[in-house]
Each structure stands twice: as structure tokens, then as C-alpha cells.
Picture (tube, rainbow, N blue to C red):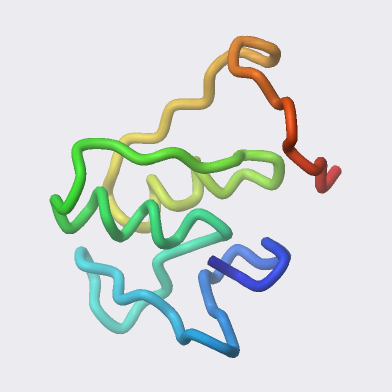
Length: 84
């Protein structure tokens, strides 16, 4: 995950950037990059991420996965710190 979820590249100065399994050498995308990589590498069937800045949709595009953003209010945001 990007530090503080402030980028759409998936780069983290402390832990590095996860490898995009679909296109190694390219960024895996956004604050949900770890989730994207896990799905695209078939390590998990699905994963969760926040989509305040579009990171679920961006990672779906970058890692050739399917992203679903439920309707606003459908999933509880209790204990989530809003970015925008």
C-alpha cells in the first residue's frame, strides 16, 4: 500500500512496491496494490480495498482483474478514516 494511501502507483518507500503479476516491471496501482496483486496472482479469490480515490477501479485496470464498487452506504464505513 502507498504510504497514507496518497498515490495511485502502489509505491512504498519503506516496503517497496509489489510486483504486478500481469505485467512485471509496471506499477500494480493505488493504495489497494497489495490486494490487486493477491487477486491477479491467484493467491486469493477476492480482496477488499477502499475506493475513495479510485484505487479499486485503478488496480482492476492495472492488474487485469475485476473491481466492484458497491453502492454508497451498502458497506459500513464505521471506523474508516475518510480521505476525501
